[in-house]
Image (cartoon, rainbow, N blue to C red; front, side, top):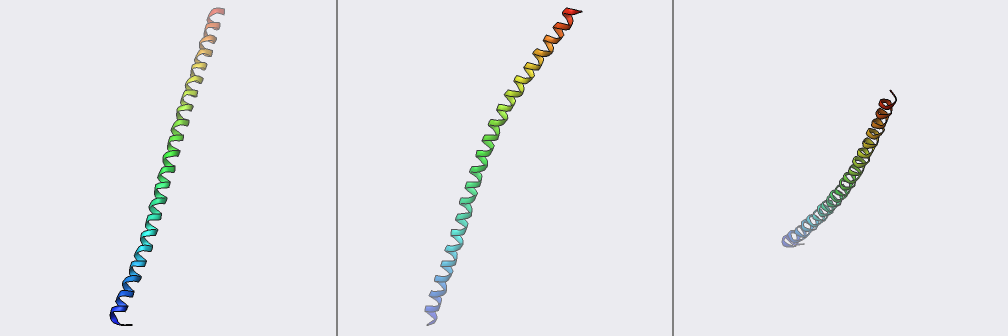
Length: 79
């Protein structure tokens, strides 16, 4: 092999290694995008669950207030 042939072969090997690293990096970026998308979906689901829980807690508080008011009214009416 001549010096030029060796240089061309080394260049080809270097380009192949670079391409391999680039492919790996692109795969990592794609995985990160998938992770970010999954996190966004989880955050959205958590927000929705929190809103539902908030409504349910609000309804429970309203029910408790009504029970307490009815109890107070009973106590006031019988005394």
